[in-house]
Image: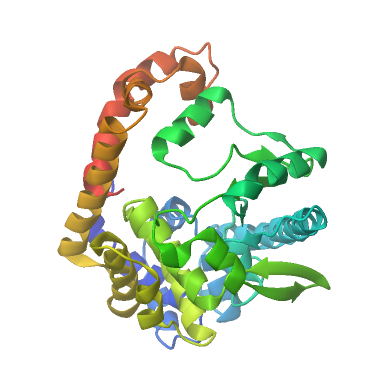
Length: 361
């Protein structure tokens, strides 16, 4: 296992690269030349889902020739592939929103797609996994039915849906469109219970943007920033694997008019949600969030787990933690359900889960 303290040059490069997506970074060239372990850097970028973001950063800074092969091609191919996939994703997002609007359902596109069309330097500069749409809770069933009428089918087996409930997801079962793009209908902002981010309020403050002549409805800048912070530091308990992409998102928001930190904090309530906002600001302005933030992230993850294990539905949660179905393990780790590896996963998962819980990695 690579030793984290040996990753200093690679970590500095990743930070400069992510920040450069929001505006020029004079230090990026020197950071690029300082990298010696390019294989390790690619592994770190993949772990953080920012390979395409690095490709965009070095391309826009004119630094491709400073990256050796085969890593140069790896970054370039990821960036090029993301342009094509994200164009399809945005097209589907616009089509689904138009269909929902025709059916009388208001919706807003959360997270990645909204950032792509308002701040990132090109469509391939950010990894976007799916289309997250926020609707009022009372409209969720109608939205789900409308998307299914467009040929969408459930993405996961029932065992995965059970796991989503255990994880505290606030969306309906994921749907895969015929194009392969996945859509999730959300009925709340992930990581927040604040009235200031109630779906009705977020929808009322949302705005229209145009992309290739298509209409997309996205959150207000403050709502978008708040939900990004809460997604990383509340919904996912500050997992370190999300920090690089979050840093890029924050840099892009800062580069397109600044981040109204005071306004964002006014939208949330409770110490945990305010901690999420402040941790995001520290990540952008000072770098790594430090030991105190690490302990706070562990505290958030512990409280979330405790609520899941002692609250309503705790019997199903305990069963999912200790005895997940064989079908779920096969789906989760991409192995045949008949494989002997599934049995080994029952032993491996507790160790992996404990390490992820304690370290956020």
